[in-house]
Length: 285
Image (cartoon, rainbow, N blue to C red; front, top):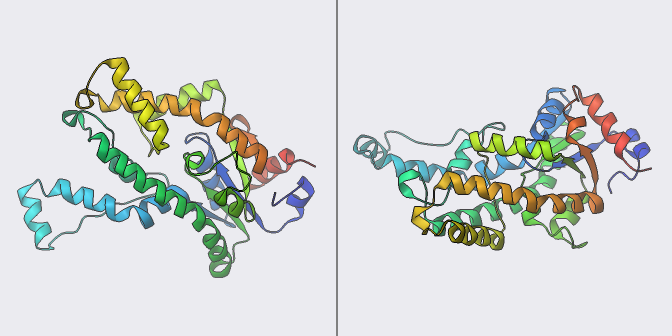
């Protein structure tokens, strides 16, 4: 690891970390807390995905909807107006809206084939955004003189790496520059995450084989066709399956590449110093 012991961590002026785990357990909370301290650079992978790599797709989707309105269509065709997404670190709704939900169009669903296409775009964007971490570490130092860096990852990092492969390209590159930190929740946290997701869905990326299995299982269980699927019902059902599927892989990454922090401990952190102390306590050696 980048820091092999608590003494390495404590002694290092440069502190670079990568927070990973399911959305809603404290990744962005800690990232924003560290940034507000004034000497940490916050790199949001989801923000990078939604702006650098998916921004044009998102804007085009908005424009496609606007073209259905004759008044807006005329203004767009004459370049009288422009439509773009206002992506924020703590508001990824433009990306969530673009990824969409498969199912009945009358309930806001999109065809499964189109959903799968958008998933492919997200996968490529996430891989590139994760590898961009190195560029932003160097940029934060050379441009702004930041010695401390936090990479706030997407919950779907486990879908773009092979946690069982010691030669995984992404993990091998990143482990040279950041300390991976898994924020681990409990069963109570899992129930709360499902509730939160139900009211405010986050952008979700599924491994294609897993997604196809979930989709076919859902159709079989309900004995319905693709266009009879309630998009909200499927996306919540799929999210619960995804939580179960990801947990052991998060753990494997932490065991092989980094450390584990408990979400209950993370939620009590109120300052950058408290967080760096928590990391030190959980580093081996």
